[in-house]
Image (tube, rainbow, N blue to C red; front, side, top):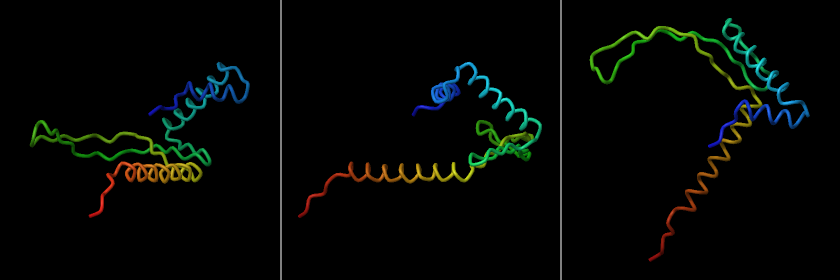
Length: 118
């Protein structure tokens, strides 16, 4: 499955707006840098209709190595980022979920062997 890269975003915006790709790249990069800086300073980032990025601290927990039964160690707390999708994004992804589910069911029904009667 293909993935969307920063380069793809820059090219698409450049084509849609007529701006030079270098300028679009600077804007995209500065936007991502600002989001990263805010999260690193424990400031949540809210992008309406897209979602909210919120810095969180995980709890310390006990870890175990499956290759060494009986040994355990403490995994220290660490900062992570939680993302909660906004309403519009959630709705569009749920629509995709339904479409993929229906496609899988159609494929399953098409590949099922036909049964012959008695």
